[in-house]
Image (cartoon, each protein chain N blue to C red):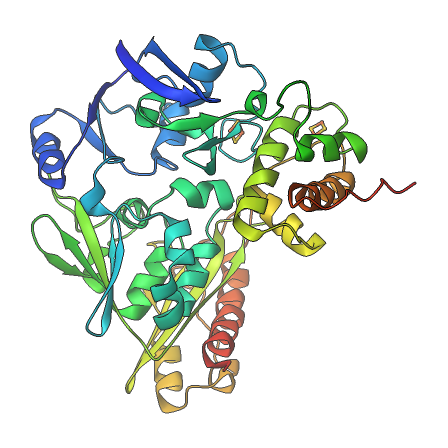
Length: 164
Length: 267
Ligand code: FES
Ligand code: FES
């Protein structure tokens, strides 16, 4: 066993882990932050996406020990004082989820896209950028709409109302 | 994943020493091939040497007529580098096409090159550009480095430190990604530097990356998409599997070569 320390959602945490412990296991099993999911064995689905030092990564494909000293943000770290993050709110408003299994990863990836590409995202960019996130339910249509609206809202612009 | 002993390297030299001393040791770069392989229990090294905190292995710099990229530089860093975009835009585009955004945030050029996956993108780029792989022990030309499926010239205790890319006047890479895995079903890189033209093919060959002599000759005579149009790559020695037959891959080599030349000559 080895000790690992990092900042998770703004709080300093540490724990004893086996070297083979993945970051996602540390988050879910040691810290009980079960919003980050595991959907595959092959680093393809993106259900496990979190931010490490400001970048979206697949927490199923990182050793917890490699993240020693890192700053980690999970889906649980987005809402503040009972108010959803604009990207979460956009997914709710635009019905960007059905079963919700892929959603935490989708939202963490979506925020990363905005961080890298800005607030005005077109449909093509969003679809390309979501290559590493798989959803079995929605057909992506509403996810793309949600990401576009959430991106705009993160820039302080009013969120367009959901169509329908 | 089986148990292993974890070592966090603090310098390249210390990592290389550990690699010799520790029994059955593997270097962990971005981990985006090694960890999935270990999770599936297809690899079970006794010792893992994590290079993640070795700062000296990271970075991109222009040196004379070359771009030098540290082994631990991620695909995202190469793709977004102003230096690479200015001098070898085709290499930035190649890096931008690897995996998905999250994979590009962790996967490294050194890891990809050392692994020499027969469907990886970088081997084609390195061979076409005539890159030099610098290890802790020596310099190896890309032509001599890649030696078949997952096989390289790296010896015991040898690790990649950086890669030197000569700046070519024209360079581009085009691939046909496998629809599921997104690895290259066939990828072709073309580079022109002075009178020399090099064409490298990944994804297709039974022994990994190879050069396509006919295309190099035709493009050497005239560097335009028309020159490769009439060529037919041979299906001999190409992979055939459930994703694509050898004949189909041979056909794709021609198509991807043409696209690469078009991209290289566009503006
Ligand atoms: S669980 Fe990480 S990519 Fe699927
Ligand atoms: S909402 Fe069910 S997997 Fe995406």
